[in-house]
Image 1: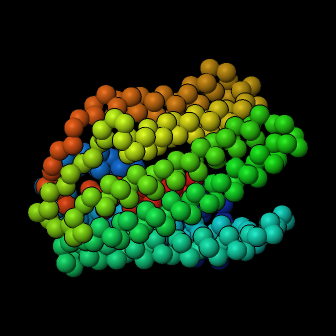
Image 2: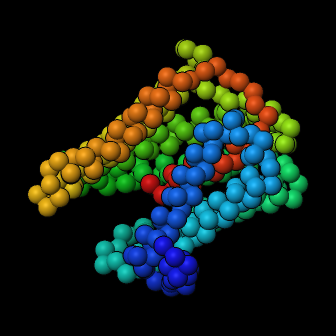
Length: 295
């Protein structure tokens, strides 16, 4: 994954499978670093608002913006080369392009605000969440509809699992749109370096937001498990080539990691606290905005 690979991706005018894979890996590494920092932002709050902290955030945001652009271009090139043309593909492509460029613009504006003025507007995050999850809801709902229509014809368990997963993702996207925007609306309109940040980790039982939080967490588990199950069925023909033991170790690592992290996070939940660090919300919510578009 050297500089030549990156340049090949940047200069590619058509679909490039290797280039797409390279760029996807780069973006995923950047997002993994971003999420990891977000998870310990309270501990490294001073470092997060330092020159190097802001520099790292700027690099991550730049990688994500470039990654979104080039992945989008290669997917559009792949659609042109495809023999199967969905009648509304051009409308979907134009809509997705507009949304992605809007997200890139919002990310760039937030980065510039942080660098030049040492603050950012919460409204930009609310807008990014609404645009991103709005498109994700529409696309995954359409995908679920198509997969269920396909299942009626061939009765494939793989198609059914992926259809249910797409439906669960759509539900999660709608729920997340409500959840994150409600949380963001409770924040100050302008976030400064000295602004206290309240981390909302729970809601009073019986309230509407407690139901929203419950649906969000359980739909997340549902679509992960359904996707995992569908992937196993899709790859099961490799058991003989890879070996039964090795195959099951490989396919079980993701679910074990996911569930252990989820259980640990649930066990460690504490009441909301205040912490004077600046950019955790930016990293967290922009990461969600990018990630949901890549599902």
